[in-house]
Length: 370
Image 1: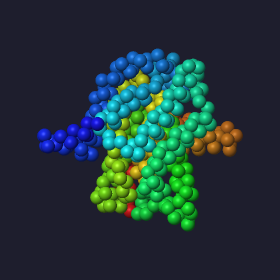
Image 2: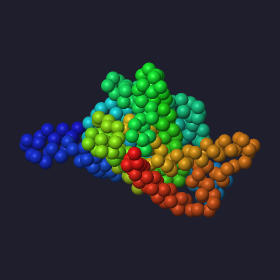
Image 3: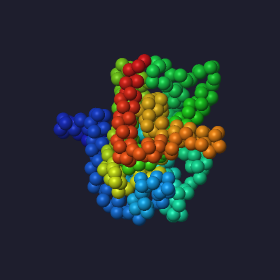
Image 4: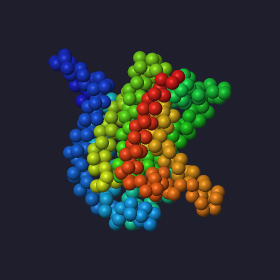
C-alpha cells in the first residue's frame, strides 16, 4: 500500500525510495517491530488466561515449569505485528499468496490444537494423523495456487540443490509428461512444507530457543529471496531467477520484526509461549518460501537446528521400537537431552542460537559452491 507513494515522485523526488525492494524490506521490519511493541501489552493481557498443561515434572526435574503459569498462543502476537506490515509494504503476487496460505492455514491448525489442549486441560490436542493430514491439505492448496499462473508451471516443476548449476528434477525428467513431473514436485513441496512446520514445532521446547533460530533462518531466506528476485544477482550466483520472489524478502523481514518482538517476551524466563499457532504457521511459511525460491535444501542447511531436532525424535522412536524400550538419547527433542546432562536451559538455548547462526552462514556460503 505505502509503496504507491513512489507514484508521487514528481511531487517530491525521495518518494521514489518507496518502490525500492531493499527499502521496503527495511521498512517492513521496522513496521512489524513497532506495531508488535505497541500491541504486545494488550495481546499479552488478552492471552493471560490461555494456559495449557506443562510437561510432567518427573521428566524434566527441576527444569520443568510448574503449574502452567505462562500463557500460550504467542504466535498471535507475531501475526498481529507481521500482517499489517505485509499489507503496507508488500506488492502482492501468487508467491506471496502461497506463502501466506501456509502461514495462516497451518497457523489455524496450530490454533485449534492449542485451543483443544486449553479447553480439555490436557496435553492432547488434534491427533497426529489428523494434524498431518490437515497440514498436507494446506501445503497442497499453496502449491495449487502457484500453478494458477500457467507460465510458472514449468518453473515449479524444478527442484534445485545448492551445489549444482542445474535442477535435479525438471520438466522432461526421464521423458515423463509435465503432469507427472509436476505431481512429483508437488509431493516434494508438501513434504518440505509439512516437515518444516513440524520441525519448528519440535524445537519450541525452551524459552527463546525456537524463535531465536527462526530469526536466523528467516533472515537468510529473506536475503536469498531478494537475490533470486533480481535477474542480475541470480545470473551472477547461477541461481534460478524467480520473478516476484523479492516480495518474499519483504515478507521475511516483516516476520523477523514480529519474531524479534516475541523474543523480547519469550526470552527466559518467558512471559508467553509461542504455541502451535506460531510454530506450525512459521514453519510452514519457511518451507513454502524455500520451495518457491527453489532453495529447499538451503532451508535444510540454514535451518540445521530444526533438522537435527526433528531427526533426533525420529531416531529415538525408531531405536525405542527396535530395541524394545531402550533409548538412544536421554530425552528428545535433543535440546532436552542436553538438559538431562546438566546443562542449564539458558546455556542450551544460547549454544543452539550460535549453531543456528553458523548454519545460516553456511547456507549463504553454499550459494557460491557451484
